[in-house]
Length: 337
Ligand code: PEP
Ligand code: MN
Image (cartoon, rainbow, N blue to C red; front, side, top):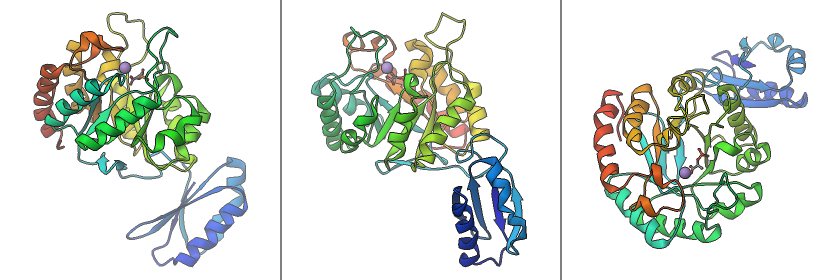
């Protein structure tokens, strides 16, 4: 429920109402604005009805939040959220490219690709140290060694790092090495994992589960923010459909829908979304056009040698072409790189 106070309401008036909300075991929200203060009360609908806030003289208007997700909803916050990743702001008028290998494999591999993307003006590096592989026999990632390499690449090339977390117990270990936790598609509804990153203050890139509805994605984001971390970025990465020509079907409806319903930045992963190298460039342009705030793309200097997802990795030439090709689309969308 959203409670809009009258323009003359004081901080003391707001606190009185916030205390009442807390005393009923509901979650109070304080959102001071330039003209008016807005308060929020989140929790069980039956308890919300007991608040009787219309009896407070400084309450101007009370509006229910109709969607099942609240904190991520545009009903609660109309303006776009900006999410910082290691000093780089994501969202707003900027279109952000995150690039790097699927997996961290070695210093030479990671530094090589970091230098390549840095030269192309990319501000953020991706790379998996813990890999959630479909087969237990596939490369599982370098673990802590991979995190150390990511931190070294970050320091050497000034590229804040996004890396996947697969175990809630790793949240604190990873904290010192990375700037943004990635929650992978296979873990979108791992609620203990969502709560673990929700207790941290670094950004979270939340990927859509391959069979998850958009409501489920938004409720997964709600878990993270409800646990205390507002820095969430949503990411469409393709869903399972009857189509087998591509690895997944990149659902661009999702981008437009999520931008309408939520104030969180929305990214697109055209690498996993298509699984086809030649389709990454056109789908990246489509992502810009439909209103995404950025893309996350897999790149490798020698895709044939990659230990994971080499078939969808862009080499230096493909990558430079991608950056050139999205530029006019970014400008047409009224954004900047
Ligand atoms: C990845 O980013 O390498 C990855 C495993 O992504 P997803 O969770 O979207 O499959
Ligand atoms: Mn991958």
